[in-house]
Length: 117
Length: 107
Image (cartoon, rainbow over all chains, first blue to last red; front, side):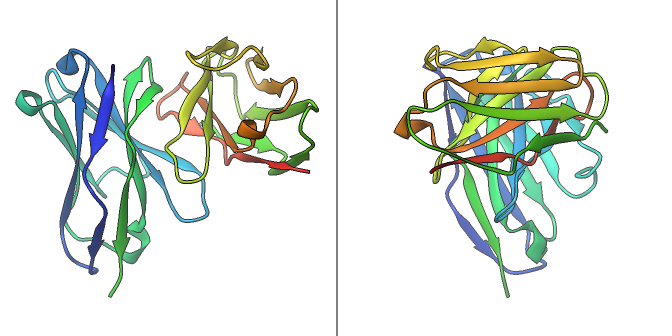
């Protein structure tokens, strides 16, 4: 069974850094793309970017280019989403999902990130 | 980027009735259109892909149709577990984009 398990909720202050994770199991992880999706409070879903676990090829949605960094560790079957300096507007639920032809076929449970002074 | 527009924003329907949700693309996405269901406190779940193919685990009362710029999700006889937010997403062009969602609520 395909499973994506995300790291736990985070509470951070503006300006702090953060790295959240998404660990996959139940499939040959390096052969798939993993995507990240944001859902801000009261808003809809936003596509952030994707990474191919096999070679860490990464693509960002223009809205998120330069705002976040997506990385992966093939050896631990884990993808990461990272901020170097958080803003209050980064407060959101973040989901990872395994892609199939840019379709989000299997989702993680989500990681709630709260940024507040 | 392609803008996806869903209507209505909120749809109130009684259990047992039919629900029709719409999704429009700002330019043709061929049949590269997916629908997701999200219930409160849960992650979204893939419902439909390729405009009309049901994902594993969803019953036949869920149906998708359309192509190019106009798409429809139909739920033929609403059950209590169907009340949720539904999102469409195009994956024909980069970046993939979502509609703003339709909240399906109990009337």
